[in-house]
Amino acid sequence: MHIETLDFEKNDDSNFHMDFIVAASNLRAANYDIQPADRLKSKLIAGKIIPTIGTTTSLVAGLACLELYKLVQGHEKLELYKNGFVNLALPFFGFSEPVAPEKKTFRDQEFTLWTSIDVQGEITLEEFVRRFNVSQESPSSRYKMEYTAFTVVLCLRDWCLDILRGATDPSMSDVVEDVSKKAIDPGKRFLMFQLLCNDLDGKGVAVPQVRYHLQARRQDLGSPE
Image (cartoon, rainbow, N blue to C red; front, side):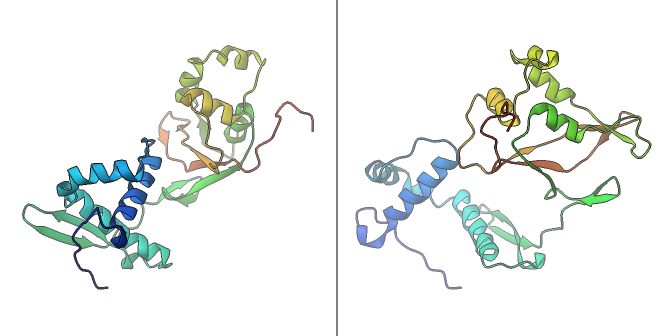
């Protein structure tokens, strides 16, 4: 790989410098819900802050992009990827091989932070709870599910009492939208849920996260069809 420096020139459209800045900055804006900027506004901003581009932030972004190239190229060997450590004040640049994710065990099954339990939606809150409920009386299991934190959040909602009375049973998407006060992006394919679990002795138990797929969302949860 050959790398060389470039002198930034915002007024020369033939070098595509501003095209890159406008595209990159608006992609970041989309990720963080920041108001996007058009080309003219981006040029005005870039003219004022260009001295700050050569910072540790840009260096870290560049190192991250190098790792993304490896990912896009399909490399699967862990030793081909690198963690980077930099200190521009010294200066110091160091690299190391990333360690494998920590393995944990639940019900004789190993999992890591990349492991997930897949649930095909759309299902209701009650169906979700029933799916993951483990009976204390079951001789085949030493675990039970605790929904304390989730229940506290639900109790802050006006329809919580209706749920307890059985008068309503919202879908998981409805719950997420009500709690977050934001509509789920139509292009979103799944939601990630963390389960808080205890064993029968009351000790916390680590379990995989739940990946709740949205592709099969029902149009009408109340329809008998």
